Image 1 (cartoon, rainbow, N blue to C red):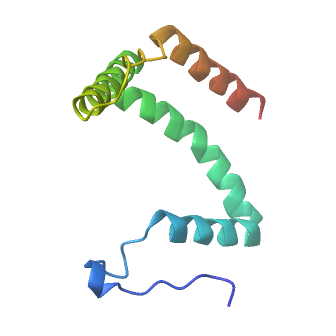
Image 2: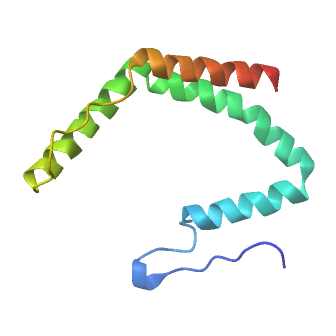
Length: 110
C-alpha cells in the first residue's frame, strides 16, 4: 500500500495513464526509496539527460529564447498598466554557461 494510486479524471478529460507532476514525483520518491539499485541507475542517467538537453537546446539559443519570453511578458504587463520601466533580462550567455560548467563539475565529482 505505499505506492500512490492514480485514476482517470473524466471531468478534466485526463485518462489514468496521464500523470501530473505531483503524482509522478510521489511515485518516483516511493520507488527510489524502496529500491536502491533503481535510485543508483537514475543517478547515472542524470548526466546523460544533462548532455542530451544541451545537444537539443544549445545554450545561446536557450538564453535568447528566455530573453525574448521575458521581454514579451514585460510588454504585456506594461500594456496592462504596470508602472515603471521593465527590468532588463538578468542573465547572459556567460552567466548561464558558468552555471552549466559548475553543474558538470558537480556531476563529475559525484
